[in-house]
Length: 321
Ligand SMILES: [Fe+2]
Image (cartoon, rainbow, N blue to C red; front, side, top):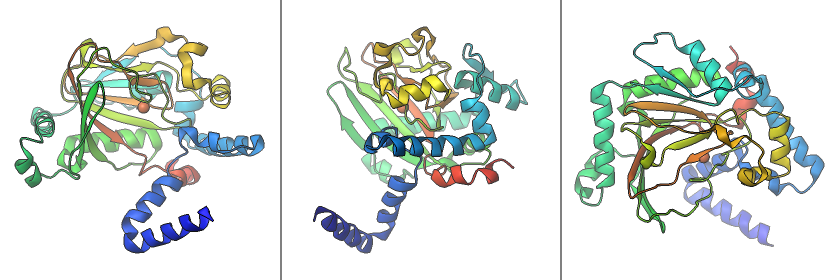
């Protein structure tokens, strides 16, 4: 009976607001498998079938094969100064394949960096500047969430507002996946309001976003020091090898500090100069460090879960051209 009500409800929603309905449907069914998708399958045989369907398809993307499956020794996180290394493609790809994370420095021209810094300033003061904000081109009204230890303000802008960042995103997504992937610029402003901070799963603990190949890019217009809750990455933990697969099936990924699956000495805090960009393979372990003092953190995220979905895995041939 419940299913009938749900079906009726879904049909009503699709009639009332078809655009929203299809966007929810797309997110729910077409985005690459979520971390807990295996927990929803009771039958062990079907669970393995589901897992290996996506893993085997993702291996057919030749770039993913090298990044996520080809085992090479990991080393320390590489840095690329975009001004001085004209042809960084090979260096970038090799180092990302080894470590799962890479830093680019000196990324945007000064005026574009300043524009992003100013956008963050407007976002963090959005309550005072509400009048101004309504005239600016934020894609959504800023969303404020206040937890017991942290305040967050979030909004989005068109990536075309930042032409050099868009160019870089195009270049890097093509290098990683084989095709240019489009996205929006997501602004995250975090402010700590209580120290010590409690652990928030999927935020300031070491976690993986998904077990299938996926990645994120983020840009820091400001310097990030140890007191600014820097991004942390467990170098080399992105390889989907036997150890990784075992950890997914026995669920020990939920607490790797307890299960000691990886050498936690490879946990590296990414301290950044202003105007830096980070590419991270987020099936590897990562997370924000906890705030150690009352401070702020401003990062612009580029995520590709809408432009790279389950169809993209099936469509690997067009990515391998
Ligand atoms: Fe994450």
